[in-house]
Length: 327
Length: 139
Image (cartoon, rainbow over all chains, first blue to last red; front, side):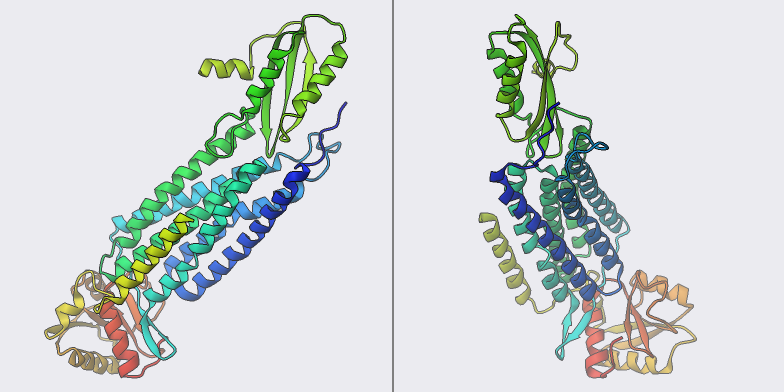
């Protein structure tokens, strides 16, 4: 039996994987520092508790990324013969659930504020002998919540695509949720200053809908990934081109009468199997081994592909078949 | 990079908007306008601190308003404060009163005042008076 490829990423992607880890460490320390600033500026208020809760939940994708990135490099062993690749899918599930929860929480929290017509009180504070409106201080503090999160999120997206890391991608979306929430809060405080009591809550409701949308889309995809759905791209959720490429190769081979494949996603990588009905049995073992190698060359993400020669193929569970039906 | 630029423009607008405003923050219900040169309605319970009465009187004076006293139970007056029917509440209050999320509380160790929720111009004016003019220490 061939062993699964033991490395997670090919050499040319190792630098990117390292960069992603660095970005995630940076994210964790950044989120801790924003939590501290929130604590220092907002005092012991209800809105501070909400902000704390959000900060804590928004740590989920980056922390789960760091844990997963330690585990994936472990070799397959007797207990886990397929290796540890799936931890990435599990991390993705946890992260997208966190994103979805933040959106739902924000929606109900700010929706209730609107319904109850809560008028937000923002007092004053003395700094360096000057009495200023606390709202200004809150705005400055929340500016810190926008720009770094925006930059971090943007840096993660190309890496997530290259590394096929949906968890990293959902963390980029979490950063987006963070900076949009902070921006909405800034606009809200400014609005409150103009005497528009509902500005804060209304801005948060609008933002929360966007977060719920992102969260739900990814939560759905992460569950599908764990259910061995056909591999989908990190962004846009399209079927990975490797499916067509494998089928192309199988069709081209003269000695194959009929073929069928099924591929699934396990975190960063794909595994799967193919069944071929050979026209003749001559050199069959050599042909299968050559063909397996050729298919493995297609994409670094395809870690383990097994080809089996069979007498007949029934049409159930065939990736190509179900795709054709869907059009 | 375009996104970053639009961000800086938003920030620029924010600061331009804020620096151009004299009466900022404002009251959603216009309490401070209602009081200035007119009348300050002060809710008062039987267990208020005598010094609080002095503060309320001199605050009214500072905005050129007369004081109208409204006696009642704390519960009753808190409801009125929430509905903006009174402007200030004098009672035996503490910073962790069960009403703290529904009204505005401000004061020092000895004296705590309650003001209507979200009337930030009035609160700002009152805090300015309390801490700057009277020199009390903010808790």
